[in-house]
Length: 265
Image (cartoon, rainbow, N blue to C red):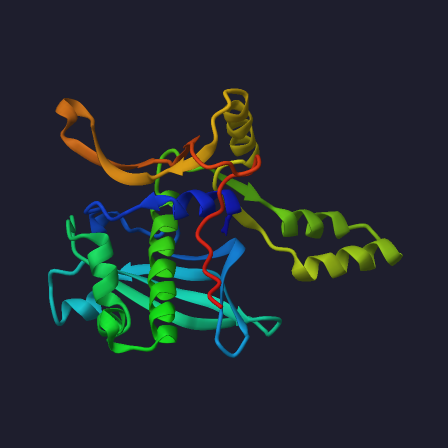
């Protein structure tokens, strides 16, 4: 899956600090890789740029955890991919296992914090250097962003488009010869099939144009996830996303306010 920049922008302006139940964290497929259309980045004191490029997520029943605590039903694990500047892609900068109970009503952000690297609270409470604090904050924001993306993929209203780039190239290469075949063969090496997730860019542009016509200066109004009652006598619950919207604020020169900048000099 590829998370559009428009989705990352909107999720950056979306809060899950409202007691969102852990039970809603699910993986859309047993194993999935989510690639960020625009990676998150920060600069280390040594000058190297660190890029968080995406994450793997998988879900399985928690038989091993049930040997310790039978109340757990499943495990969702998130493992990130990253690179430094122009170096090769690496896996495992941050690994985050979430043990989830049936109908788990525990607060998602609280559990994310509890499941994170030991000592983070001490670091943020003044027990670490400035670099340690920035690393801890970056890690926490990355974990929360991954959880938001997984929440988004389970929504009924989620916009997900299947792209068969590699399959189309494989089909097109049949019956071709010479230079054309060689050219397509080279493209196949870097092409892949994927699911594009997130709102269209045009929708954002249209909204900006409307705001400009009304002479309203744009800013993001915070979005959030919440439970919605539905069904007979409204006894059932499902998660919905109240997306952030642009409203009047500081002048941005006709462009949406960017999501939070993680580059720390």
